[in-house]
Image 1 (cartoon, protein in one colour):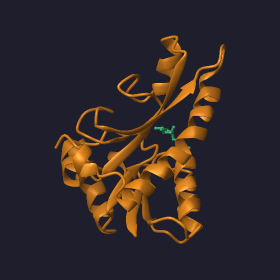
Image 2 (cartoon, rainbow, N blue to C red):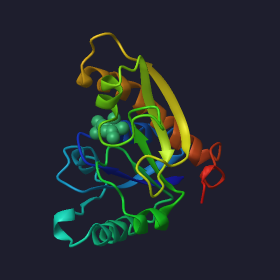
Image 3 (cartoon, protein in one colour):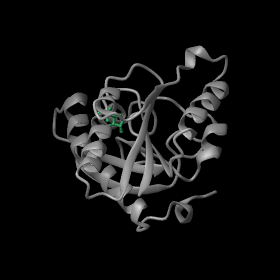
Length: 197
Ligand code: GRF
């Protein structure tokens, strides 16, 4: 059974889908803890299941590296096989990334390497893209630059708002993330072979 820690900053619909999949009893992974940088609403999905949660706030640390080290310490208490960033809206410092790589993945709402950063959906719309999508990738020390594991394309509808497009991307993103974690758990995906490290 692959033990995962999920990291979030917001609503946590990707987390919820991972938890529901694990609840089914048919998946080769289990969520052992959920961490955040803030009072993320999605932490409730873990709390209602009795799964441990933790918050490590950047404002309580002098530097980004110090925050990363403290966050890492909390994560490692749960001895995960895989750490999944599912809507964690922070750039992770290199000490953090190097300690967990390549067993540290992220989901991003665009077809990387297009539209990295915090506004992947907005940037695709601003560029006039007719298609965009979602990428699950290994986190490296750059911003959304790590090796791609899986991608799925989503067409952009004429006149669509950022919120509507993001919701349609998330409808594809949630099952893609579950499928990817399942394949990592079974060995169908081998992160060390995809990694540049
Ligand atoms: C996802 O689209 C993720 O790719 C992006 O933020 C969103 C988080 O959604 N970084 P949720 O909190 O899982 O609902």
